[in-house]
Length: 195
Image (cartoon, rainbow, N blue to C red; front, side, top):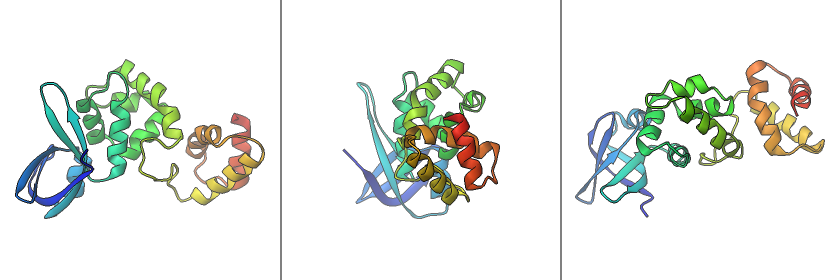
C-alpha cells in the first residue's frame, strides 16, 4: 500500500495534481482543500488513498493525513462513493463536515452537490458516534477552540461524576454552540441537564 508520494509538482489544477517522483509522473485526484494547500509550492507530499476497481485504478491525494482519514470515513458510508466524498471535501472544510455531522445539520450536508436528504441522514446516523470517538481524524483534538482548556476541565469533572467520555463528547458541541463564552461551571451545569 502506498502511504504518500513526495515529489515535484509538475501540474496542479483544482481537481488534479501531477507529482514527479524519481522520473515517474503520478496523476493524483485531489480536493479543493488540497489544491489550496499546494498552491504556490514547487514540491509536495500527497497522502494517498489507492482506489482500485475492476475497470480502474486511481490515486486520491490529500495535503494532510487528517483529510485522508475523513475521506476514508465518508466512503465507508453506504451510498457515498469516492466522487461524493471528494465533492464534500471540496465544498466544506474537514472541520465543517465534522461539525455538521455532530450537530446533525442535515441542510449543511445537503448543500453539497450530489448529496441528497437520505444520504445526508445516513452520514449523520452512521458517522456521528464514530466522529465523537475520534474516527476520521489524524490525532487532532475534537474541540479546537479558545476554550479547549475549559472543555478539558469540565470533561474531567464530568468523568469523575461517573459519565463516560463518549457521552460527554456527544453533548459538548451543542453546549459550546449555545454559549461560546461559557465558564467551566456553566459547561458542567449544561452538560448535567443533557446527560
